[in-house]
Image (cartoon, rainbow, N blue to C red; front, side, top):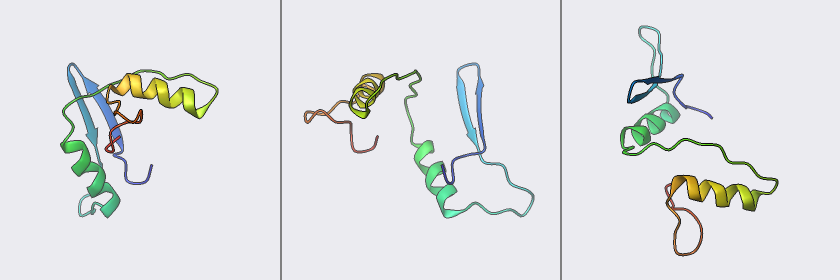
Length: 78
């Protein structure tokens, strides 16, 4: 995904998503958007979804994320 941080590191109970730059390197607008969105995360979910259709995968994803809306989809932020 364009702009997603370079490193995903788990250390104990900490999940760190890190963008790596050389000295003088600049963060792109896509990277800024990712880092800003990730800075606001207060929950982390992990798991595996398995299915042969998009509908089955989305249903399992909804259960994993736990943010099912009244309309049956996920929250707009997901």
